[in-house]
Image (cartoon, rainbow, N blue to C red; front, side):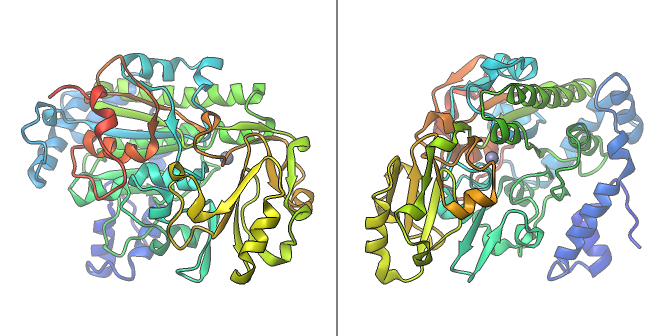
Amino acid sequence: MITCTSAWTLAECSKRRYGGSMKPPAALCLLLLMACRSAAPAADSAPAGGSDAGTDGADATDATDGADATDGSDSGQDSGQRPNPYADDPYALVDSTLILVSLDGFRHDYMERAETPNLDRIANEGLRVERLVAAFPTKTFPNHYTLATGLWPEHHGIVDNSFYAPDLGTTFSMSDAGDNRDPRFFGGEPIWITAERQGVPAGTMFWVGSEVVWPSGIQQTWAVPYDGSISYDARVDRVLYWLDQPTDAPRMLTLYFDEPDHAGHSYGPDDAHVTAAIEEVDAAVGRLIAGLEARGRLDQTDLVVVSDHGMTAIATERALYVDEVLDLDLVWIQSWGAWSNIWPRDEAHTDAILRGLRYLPHATCARREDLPEHLHFSSGERVAPLHCIADLGYTLTSSDWSDSIPDALTGGTHGYDSAETDMHGILLARGPHIQAGSRLAPVENVNVYSLLARLIEVEPAANDGSLAPWTEALRPR
Ligand SMILES: [Zn+2]
């Protein structure tokens, strides 16, 4: 049976169990490792705050000078193992850690309508972007993977939460564990792989794409497969537990919270339940900050808080019944709601289908090549030939769909045109590489990957974004 130890890494797992071969047993090894890590008793009992935390860290490494001593020894190992492309940069001397936090569905203006002392602190002591412009479609899976790769969805291939992939002759479903491990669906290189490839140990406490088993054999050192039942406190504590490890402690981490998205869907963005959810995720960020402070690490940590998209209110009286203008037997539509991707069953009917769809009020329907340029959604085999995008607050539906999901037409949703400011999220950042008091005009989230690569001082993989929007907010060289 597996012996789980705190220092057990994927590379060791593969070597020990499979003589170093990463193919094909890497998938099994990753699963074993994830199970092992999930079961690690210290994670759930790891202190997240208070003065004990620093002491425990010091004991674990036999260091005499608290958590800082641990950092020192790690940095020595890391800097000796990898070429530093920023060797001339004085800030390359900062032994920093990047923690990327996502608050699902956190609209750009949510901080103004709730008590968010922890997010306010990050903004006040670092950078706040006026709005983080989501990629189209403004949904969770495409945007998390754009944040991680710097690629538009048409280029990274995660074109929706669930989608048809004609190149593979199959569908991807966000809730299918096998699909989430299958590298054929995921294009580009996520930041944790960019990090590991260049010698920076990485860990993922959930992120879209983090469960992929890459053919290259390169994986993040620490990972937990998605399990929405793990409490927010336990997610934070797991990250802190990883940071406390004496060997292979991650220097690049992701952390994901699924609120306030759920509350926004159920009740609409203006409801008190959303205010409560905003304050809940702020408290989770506060637990992380407290844990870092207790370890003496807060000022060596670039903390980047983002959201994937915003939220807007919908209502039954703003439902758009597509089956009133189109015989649904002629098409296959996987996505309903703010946006519908439409695959004609017979391409010869495409013009006639589009003519029908244009009778739909409060929606824009077009061939993919005629979609507005700012959507960046006109190429790639997985982008459907036809699209309808509802006006903000309207819902594309069919009689069958709204019958099967009774609350589909009430509360809130997202997925609309990325030019709609209600679809925009947040980006806050604080840390050694960030200029305190920075404020930036809206930035497209395709540029976030370039920022992350800069913060961990690695060369970014080829991507659609740029570091240019961030230069004002980075500490001068
Ligand atoms: Zn959502």
